[in-house]
Image 1 (cartoon, rainbow, N blue to C red):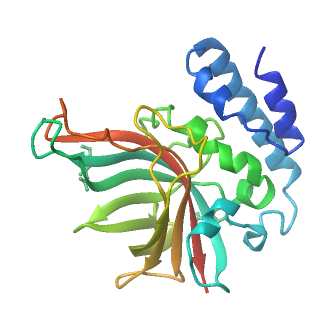
Image 2 (spheres, rainbow, N blue to C red; image 1 turned 30 degrees about the vertical axis):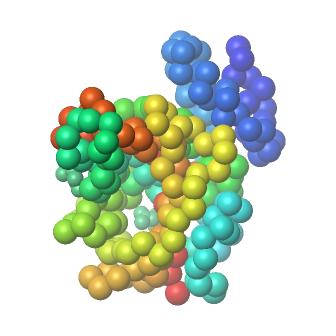
Length: 251
Ligand SMILES: *[C@@H]1O[C@H](CO)[C@@H](O)[C@H](O)[C@H]1NC(C)=O
Ligand SMILES: *[C@@H]1O[C@H](CO)[C@@H](O)[C@H](O)[C@H]1NC(C)=O
């Protein structure tokens, strides 16, 4: 029953550094399953209690404070927040310790976490920690546990350009954000690291080909995704599981 204090913290919206707990938690599968269930239940309850006009108001959304280490323009308006879950892709020239893995892109599904971002920022910040160990649903359009978040789009690379495609179904066309890197900062100490560490936080600016009111995208609250330090014993191409929160800003 070690998850109980965490749930109390969640309810009080004052999540007290459960990172170590989460790292340890991966060994306790039964308890972990129960934990996910509790989180899901909590979020659903929260959803019902915030079903009032303006409750998911994006203007209430703020980046986590660690993101202030990356410069970006002021005056932009938060539009959406997505939980991203997928892989970071790497290649290795050979499998020796003298070669270094090269990042060649990422593939991730984006799940709409805007309501959670507007109301429960502390909970939102911890979602990637839970999410990165949960396999994606086989049905591409299914919602994602533990929080039953709805699919909002896809993140992938087109000709080495990071793209966020927010057109999912014929009824949900929310645009496309083509980006380039504007800044980066190491994930803060205590980030859930997986085997090789958490990928850096990123600031991306929109470029040609963007459809819709999008000016920037921030990748924050990263969990895992980094490659090993060297290519020793690695295949020519490999993927590392990761999760992160993506914040979309417009004018
Ligand atoms: C990344 O790896 C996935 C899975 O193998 C693949 O489908 C995708 O095309 C790769 N993307 C890039 C940019 O390498
Ligand atoms: C995300 O969810 C919010 C709140 O339910 C909704 O207003 C918004 O349209 C959704 N965004 C996308 C891109 O689906």
